[in-house]
Length: 494
Ligand SMILES: [Zn+2]
Image (cartoon, rainbow, N blue to C red; front, side, top):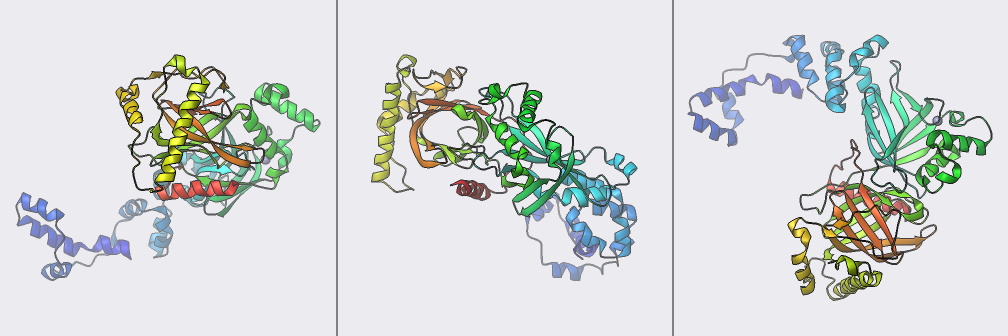
């Protein structure tokens, strides 16, 4: 057994110590970075190793050793002998595993009252459901969404995140528990649906495959209220949001959709989730990548993921609408083509802005025609270079910003200074994602947490504000895994 061999291999290490004693400190330091001498030679020099077995160690020491091993290795250790198996019943081992691997550090002692051990919590709750921890996008037609499954005390909870009320894009995300899993008794974990007003009730979770799981409510009557459907719906709106149906329609597009799906049979028949990751960040990124809330006209607020890909920045929809579904790339920013804004007076003219952006689009088109050499750095436009040199952003100052007259915005409450602007394209389409088309626009970086996009063709402005919520278990295992995830969620809705 590997553990035994490592622990009992005292012979060679004693040989090493003896050799080090003959050297000065400097030599010893140097020897540390040297590859070891032939272990065979060492073994010959050293006196025969005294017989030592892991089994002879005192149980307290074994508990200490076992508690430092990954929990997933412990079951095979239990099969070695009855002594090991007995020691592995020590709950402090499992308490430490729960804490170190899943961050559970509270209330574990309370468990003892209910007869549930830390070992049960580890094996039947945390380890059993480890694959659903993280960030997910529900499959709700084009609407998408955001779910974070986390370990919270002795529960695993699925929190659904919803954008704030339109148009308050700087407000924090709202969140509601959709389900929870816990160990109420020893034998297995209980899954409960948290939706509706009647409290937690019986639910079910199925891990479909890696990076996909589904939830099911077994008591959908808990979602219903007394009275007719229309009345239920109005009551729900009034109680939950303090609004009438009419008030709410444009303000709460996202949760209306979610509610509709949960309330109607879609949810009874399962809701499926696909794993998403937060974008990896690099030191030279324009700003920290991540999730943003953005204004999408009458569609309300939507969640967009900003990520950097060399010379491009991409905004991918995490929530979507019947025109542009979740998973699609709503904006693409060309970081090679900066646009120098005119002074505020001239910026008020939409025609002037339009001229500037279309000029760059023409330039981009020509470059694509000429070059097609992906690896060749295109020669910077001399005027652009000069403009870049004058950018106030270079000295860390802001530049005055105002929306051109005639460009519609959900709110007048947008930043009046910006750091820099780039050429970009925005995706527009008809209802049902028909005839999608990338149209020219202007990307405006306001500060570390806010950016904007002017959709030239729509004469409309979207403001994006960073989602400040801290999501757990949401990092991509590799940049490649992140890119694959982006491609997959895009392909699913195309
Ligand atoms: Zn339910």
